[in-house]
Image 1 (tube, helix red, strand yellow):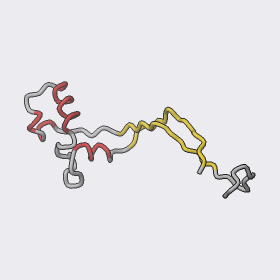
Image 2 (image 1 turned 90 degrees about the vertical axis):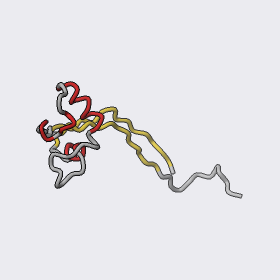
Image 3 (image 1 turned 180 degrees about the vertical axis):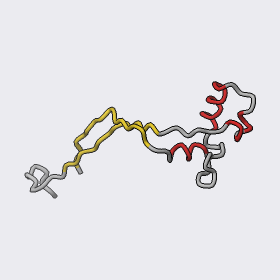
Image 4 (image 1 turned 180 degrees about the horizontal axis):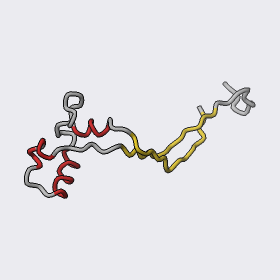
Length: 92
């Protein structure tokens, strides 16, 4: 039986970090005429429709991307912000 009151020779300690990252990307401009599903909508209706359906909508660069969302996800980064940083001590 092992004596648990013995002083250990080593102990492993690690840091686990938690945080939220916000990445703002350059806009992708779409030509409304290329998206017949937006025909007859107001700008607000278009924004709502795109927000709900951009993973199913065709990409502006449809020879490279499968959806408008993928197209937007690959545009250049304008700003990054990390918030809510927390650190926690853990042992193995």
